[in-house]
Amino acid sequence: MILVTFIPMKNKNLFNRKGLKSFRSSLRNRSTSAEATFWEMLKSRKLDGRKFRRQYSIDNFIVDFCCPSEKLIIELDGDPHGEYNKIQEDKNRDKYLENLGFTVLRFENRFVFQEPEYLISEIRKVINRKESI
Image (cartoon, rainbow, N blue to C red; front, top):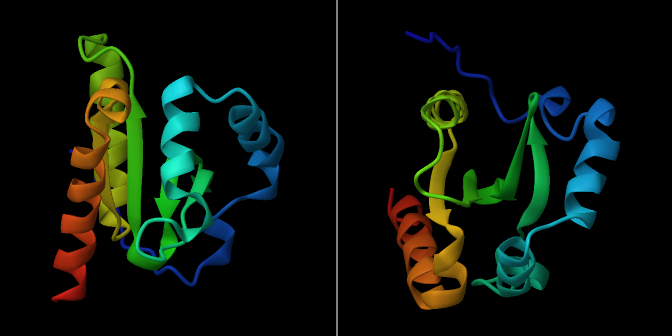
């Protein structure tokens, strides 16, 4: 069992740490085709005026996409039949980020190309749910 203490968003040392800057930049420059395509859907506040960031670091983790104002993280995953250890690592990582107050959405890469409307509608559901609270 992982016990995580809630850390408020105001802790600037938690986000985009300088030590991870070159790695974040490298990930942005080597993005997968699914990430690049999905970024086109999100960048420049295209999704309901929300500001998304890509390859954003939270503590020692780098997430694919993050909307800090909504505390929403979106992860794109490759092979859905991945290794058990990787799946467990992702679950532990998601749990940690959720304990910081984030909502984590995971989608397979194929949805970016085959069902982009589904992705956007799922993101909107989360945003609308948070707005109604």
